[in-house]
Amino acid sequence: MKVPIFPLNGAIMFPYTNLPLNIFEERYIDMVDYSLSKNRIVGMVQYKPNNEIYNVGCYGKITVFNETPDKRYFINLEGKSCFKIVREVNSEYKFRMCEIEALNDYNNNNLNDKLKIDLINNYKKYNKIKNINLNLEEVSNLNIVDLLKLIVMVSPFETSIKQMCLELKSNTDLYENVLSTLKIELASIEQTNSIN
Image: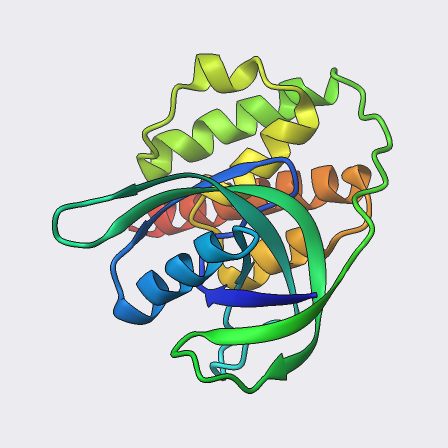
């Protein structure tokens, strides 16, 4: 399958999640126009430090779009499947096109909801320190897998950490990595504060 690619660090998407985007660059306005005229699919990927794109991303379908008077788009992408880039396709478009291959979804092994308590406690501390404006009561009602995906999507984790989480093959691995990341970040902030 050939899809237009939107490389954007930090804006990671998982299958079965929603990613709102504000599109204002001309080439990506063209990308949205192209996608709306075809199957409404857009592939999200991140950049490596050397400015190459990672070869694993997630594609989504545009489910909502609004055009502003100044010709920008507000769109919502609904995550469909992770993918691997097979090759970049030469095209006449200003945006990048790639041939992709869909990857199998997570091994949806069930996670015990008791694990949520430790996750939420650490995430509340992290949220407070990072000043993330999120309704934690509402978030706490999500099932643990959706909560893990949301944490990765909205938290200011490094690009490499977000990418690693996207590429993990099981929910158990996702849980362990997200919790570990939160604890490491909290410990690092506490250490910095104690030095100062």
